[in-house]
Image (cartoon, rainbow, N blue to C red; front, side, top):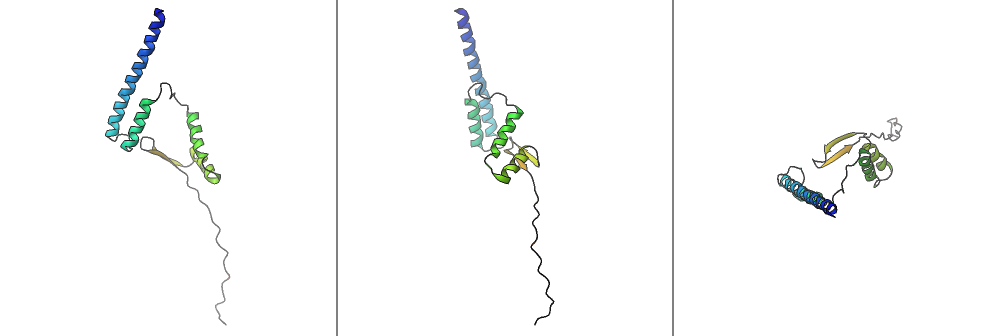
Length: 130
């Protein structure tokens, strides 16, 4: 029985440590939000800080690059036709990428050129009026 109590005490101690770590992180994030360090509005910054603090333990395991790509490609599913095809191409690296999450977002851009056929030429008139 003493071993069970010891194990329970360690679990409670770890949970308390996790709460303390989350509170310290929250306070640091709050200060960063007040100083504008994350480059987003104060309200958005604090929403994110609260979400991180309230996240249940183990809810955010490290995410593999493959999962991140799948998540990005899922965002393209809201589009159809050529827009969907272009979105997938941008996610897979076609075009240019600028910005960052910390700066407020990543911009992916791919420029395509479409050649529009010119209208048929009218034959030139002989210039003589009748």
